[in-house]
Length: 107
Image (cartoon, rainbow, N blue to C red; front, side, top):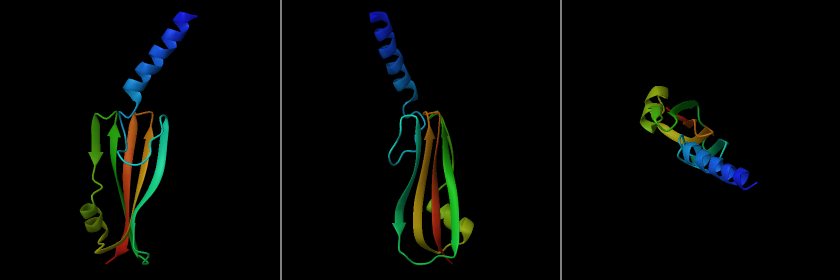
Protein backbone atom coordinates (compact mmCIF):
# COMPACT_ATOMS: atom_id res chain seq x y z
CA UNK A 1 0.00 0.00 0.00
CA UNK A 2 2.84 2.38 0.78
CA UNK A 3 4.40 1.78 -2.64
CA UNK A 4 1.17 2.73 -4.39
CA UNK A 5 0.84 5.93 -2.35
CA UNK A 6 4.48 6.93 -2.92
CA UNK A 7 4.19 6.17 -6.64
CA UNK A 8 0.99 8.24 -6.90
CA UNK A 9 2.55 11.22 -5.15
CA UNK A 10 5.66 10.95 -7.31
CA UNK A 11 3.57 10.73 -10.49
CA UNK A 12 1.47 13.78 -9.55
CA UNK A 13 4.63 15.76 -8.69
CA UNK A 14 6.30 14.90 -12.00
CA UNK A 15 3.11 15.70 -13.93
CA UNK A 16 2.81 19.06 -12.16
CA UNK A 17 6.42 20.00 -12.83
CA UNK A 18 6.35 19.11 -16.51
CA UNK A 19 2.89 20.18 -17.58
CA UNK A 20 1.75 23.02 -15.36
CA UNK A 21 2.13 26.32 -17.18
CA UNK A 22 4.63 25.16 -19.77
CA UNK A 23 2.48 26.83 -22.38
CA UNK A 24 0.55 29.59 -20.67
CA UNK A 25 -1.52 32.46 -22.04
CA UNK A 26 0.35 34.66 -19.59
CA UNK A 27 -2.61 36.62 -18.31
CA UNK A 28 -5.74 35.99 -16.31
CA UNK A 29 -6.84 32.93 -14.42
CA UNK A 30 -5.42 29.54 -15.35
CA UNK A 31 -6.94 26.12 -15.01
CA UNK A 32 -4.70 23.11 -14.46
CA UNK A 33 -6.13 21.11 -17.37
CA UNK A 34 -8.05 23.67 -19.44
CA UNK A 35 -8.39 27.45 -19.60
CA UNK A 36 -10.70 29.58 -21.71
CA UNK A 37 -11.38 33.14 -20.57
CA UNK A 38 -12.39 36.50 -22.03
CA UNK A 39 -11.12 39.60 -20.30
CA UNK A 40 -12.38 43.11 -21.03
CA UNK A 41 -9.37 45.41 -20.89
CA UNK A 42 -10.65 48.74 -22.18
CA UNK A 43 -13.95 50.18 -23.36
CA UNK A 44 -15.39 53.64 -23.91
CA UNK A 45 -18.99 52.63 -24.59
CA UNK A 46 -18.94 54.28 -28.01
CA UNK A 47 -20.24 52.41 -31.02
CA UNK A 48 -17.66 51.02 -33.39
CA UNK A 49 -17.71 50.20 -37.09
CA UNK A 50 -14.58 48.09 -37.41
CA UNK A 51 -13.26 45.07 -35.53
CA UNK A 52 -9.98 43.14 -35.75
CA UNK A 53 -8.58 40.11 -33.94
CA UNK A 54 -5.07 38.69 -33.84
CA UNK A 55 -3.45 35.98 -31.71
CA UNK A 56 -0.13 34.82 -30.35
CA UNK A 57 0.45 31.10 -29.78
CA UNK A 58 2.74 29.02 -27.59
CA UNK A 59 3.62 25.33 -27.85
CA UNK A 60 5.06 23.72 -24.70
CA UNK A 61 6.42 27.10 -23.71
CA UNK A 62 9.27 26.41 -26.13
CA UNK A 63 7.96 27.95 -29.35
CA UNK A 64 5.80 31.04 -29.56
CA UNK A 65 4.68 32.96 -32.60
CA UNK A 66 2.20 35.59 -33.75
CA UNK A 67 1.62 39.32 -33.55
CA UNK A 68 -1.21 40.67 -31.44
CA UNK A 69 0.13 44.17 -30.91
CA UNK A 70 -2.23 47.12 -30.94
CA UNK A 71 -0.29 48.81 -33.74
CA UNK A 72 -0.54 45.70 -35.95
CA UNK A 73 -4.29 45.45 -35.38
CA UNK A 74 -4.85 49.15 -35.99
CA UNK A 75 -2.91 49.12 -39.25
CA UNK A 76 -4.50 45.89 -40.47
CA UNK A 77 -8.06 47.09 -39.91
CA UNK A 78 -7.47 50.82 -40.52
CA UNK A 79 -8.74 51.72 -37.05
CA UNK A 80 -7.63 55.17 -35.85
CA UNK A 81 -9.75 55.53 -32.70
CA UNK A 82 -9.88 52.42 -30.47
CA UNK A 83 -13.14 52.14 -28.53
CA UNK A 84 -12.82 48.65 -27.04
CA UNK A 85 -10.11 46.07 -26.36
CA UNK A 86 -10.69 42.48 -25.18
CA UNK A 87 -8.31 39.61 -24.53
CA UNK A 88 -9.26 35.97 -24.94
CA UNK A 89 -7.02 33.28 -23.48
CA UNK A 90 -6.98 29.55 -24.15
CA UNK A 91 -4.71 26.82 -22.80
CA UNK A 92 -4.83 23.06 -22.60
CA UNK A 93 -2.62 20.89 -20.37
CA UNK A 94 0.36 23.23 -20.66
CA UNK A 95 0.89 21.89 -24.17
CA UNK A 96 -0.76 24.66 -26.21
CA UNK A 97 -1.82 28.18 -25.28
CA UNK A 98 -2.89 31.34 -27.07
CA UNK A 99 -3.76 34.92 -26.27
CA UNK A 100 -6.01 36.75 -28.73
CA UNK A 101 -6.52 40.49 -28.76
CA UNK A 102 -9.74 41.90 -30.21
CA UNK A 103 -9.89 45.61 -31.01
CA UNK A 104 -12.95 47.61 -31.98
CA UNK A 105 -12.96 51.18 -33.22
CA UNK A 106 -13.57 53.72 -35.95
CA UNK A 107 -11.58 55.23 -38.79
